[in-house]
Length: 166
Image 1: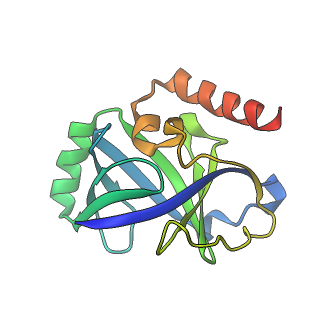
Image 2: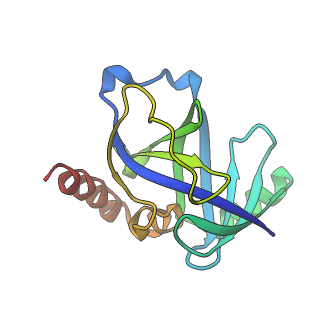
């Protein structure tokens, strides 16, 4: 079992500052189980479909990943039902920017994976306005986002940006 050490930030990127979609990777994530542990299937990675099990909360979480067949990914997405999120992932140096699609359109999260939870963060990418850290805000865990009904997803996006600008 490995560890994922990651921090996440709610961000805003002016529309003119968006990288071209072709510079990102379209990811689709289905959650067979959300909560602790979460079990998800993801497609869109260069290595193929990846099954992931994560447990814990906050900056440091236990994580196990395995590449699976396309047939297994299809079966897992069927098991996930409507608990699916889609996003475009943009690598920006040490950082990763996720632009969510569908009912989560407008939600943008900036992530960074660290070697140690006490590592100093590099400056965020140019053109990305960091609004606040959401690492410990359970509302922004992808499995929880996937479990929301469509209207709850849209409401969360609106509320998150309203709270960040108050």
